[in-house]
Amino acid sequence: MKPLISLSKAEAKAIALDALGFSDARPQSVWDVFDRTNLLQVDSVNVFERAHYMPLFSRLGSYQKSELDDLTGGFNPELIEYWAHEASIIRTQDLPLFHWRMSDNRYTTWDSKLATWITNELKERGPLTTSDFEHPGHARKGSWWGWSDVKRTLERMFFCGALVSGGRSGFKRIYALPEQVLPSDLMASPPSQPEAKKVLLTRAANSLGVSTQNDLADYFRMSPSKVSHLIQELTEDGKLMKLEVEGWKTTGYAIPEVNLTPPTHQGTTVLSPFDPVCWNRERTSRVFGFDYKIEIYVPEPKRVFGYYSLPLLHNGELIARLDLKSNRQQKTLQVQSSWVEESELSKFPKSAVIKHLSHIAKWQGLKEIEIAKKGNVSLELGSDRL
Image 1 (cartoon, helix red, strand yellow):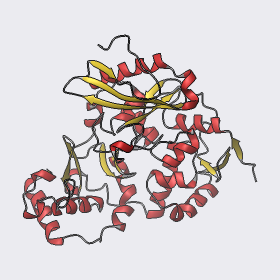
Image 2: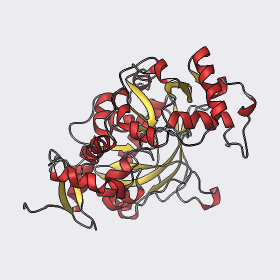
Image 3: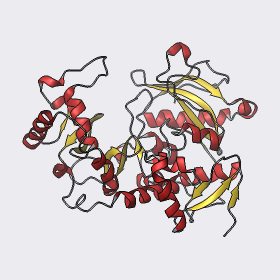
Image 4: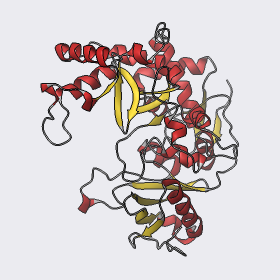
């Protein structure tokens, strides 16, 4: 038996960032990013920028959001939405890998009469957003975010594959019948559940660089206990290899082709709270020593770092949190607070961060930057006009 490869914390961190696209060989296109991440998580919060656009900016720099939008929607799109991690954009060709998830939930109770009515509406009118449906069961229930019976049924049908995404109108999901969006042969012969999960676990390992069993399962939202035997089989087949990582209490895994000696990441960028670098809070703490929690759902008086506090990656380390808001009416990027890790205070790269904020504002089409004096570091602009 070969001895396990042992990695230091610094090596594991560099491997993780390299695998997700933060290396010398940086991604150059939307497709390059998908080769690294396999998906983009979708989230409704728009105080700074929609979540699915941000991982592309973090890796590509300024780019046109239409480069992503143009790959979605219409018949046989190159990218499509499904519940891969959470709601996510994936390659359309990868949709069969989630057939097992659709099938597992296919017979979950829903309102069959309402589902039949929705199906007939789509047949007659074509793909529709939620607001396009007119039905007595379309009234919101409970608090302001409560779903109507129509919305709830649409989402159940979407999750189970009875409906698919036809893209987005604004940020509203367009619901469609599968035949209105997908080629007839795409879902005709999906892989078995074990086969599909093995592919997804291998993809997760490729994206994460080095990971635990829980990390691998979490990437595509699978139960760790239900995939442990598949990870063992992948290891026995040579598609995964075991590693020891300093400070980790459990075995690490990587694909055999992983770059074990990547250069340390160089550069400065904010990350989405839903970027694979930091979406798993336990992993973020274990790999980067960065205890991160998004405070959107924390009552305002109890927030420490801010409503939409974004991790800041600089030269291979998560060093700070910036609470950003794109004030589109005033054409201003608002930095509502700036918090630096205590270990980084004495070496905080102010000039690099200010330069990056300028890039962010230009990408967002904003003309000014406004920095609040809140946090444990003082960011100062030479000029607030771009």
